[in-house]
Picture 1 (cartoon, protein in one colour):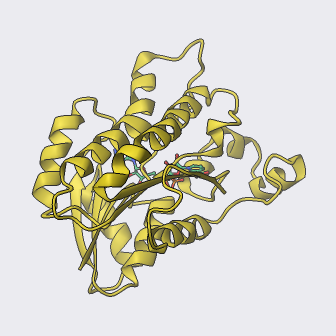
Picture 2 (cartoon, rainbow, N blue to C red):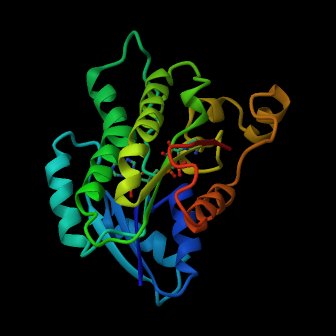
Picture 3 (spheres, helix red, strand yellow):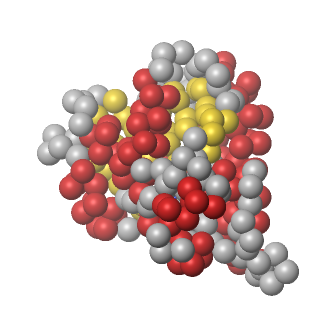
Amino acid sequence: MRDYLISGGSSGIGLELCGNLGKRAGTHLIIITRDRTRAAAAVKKKVGADTALDFIEADLADPGTGAELHKLLDQALQRRPAAFIHSAGLALPCALRKGDSGKVQQLLQVNTLSFMEITRWLMLHHHNAGPCKVVALSAQAARHSLPNMELYAVAKAALEAYVRQAAPALLPLGISIYALAPGFVDTPMARSSPLWQLHPDFARYLTDSGLQPQGLIPPEAVADFILYLLDKPGPYGSGGIIEL
Ligand SMILES: NC(=O)c1ccc[n+]([C@@H]2O[C@H](COP(=O)([O-])OP(=O)(O)OC[C@H]3O[C@@H](n4cnc5c(N)ncnc54)[C@H](OP(=O)(O)O)[C@@H]3O)[C@@H](O)[C@H]2O)c1
């Protein structure tokens, strides 16, 4: 049985990944979600009946989640998982001038700090554990921010900085770590973005405007790429930021 810990497994890219992993025999998915019932309904439609499923109910926006999250992970996992994929994300528009500190806190907690906290838990549970791959979803926004998305960009840039800095410390513990930075992906997050609302034929807008000449990315393409990283033998390229 291979354990995979996935945040954001209930929707979009994370849900596609659950579907991919669930097609493999001997898969145990442990999904971090705010709503176990809703997540279970979505994931069960994607995976086979023999996929083992567990859920950790936690709001990753909660600044008090750190110690609590470690406790929940201790309860849910008997050993370090084969991989941890951080697909939970929050893309709140937040104007810098008007931005309220609550939104700043939420953006950093969900996108960055919760990921760091879970990775720290993996580091503490390295004894007698096999190799572990960590993949975090960053975004092109870390480099090319859009108006009102600057704080999301800061959170993703910090996530990437952490991946680079943590890689050498994680290697001796058998953990390799990567960040994946896609452009716009066709998921509920992108569909609710102000830019999509402004341009209903969004795929066409992306290519015509030159903002994303390759067009809108299907979530399956990102999930396939994550699978490639998980299957790739060895820790080569750990600390890498891969732009999609
Ligand atoms: N879509 C894009 O265009 C795009 C582009 C670049 C990067 N990304 C990144 O890719 C990742 C996946 O995005 P997506 O497009 O698949 O988004 P999505 O469909 O909106 O899914 C977001 C996921 O994040 C989880 N989440 C949000 N807030 C949470 C919280 N407070 N606590 C726990 N979980 C929380 C949700 O889980 P629950 O509702 O079950 O709690 C949900 O499964 C994100 O990190 C995003 O920033 C997306």
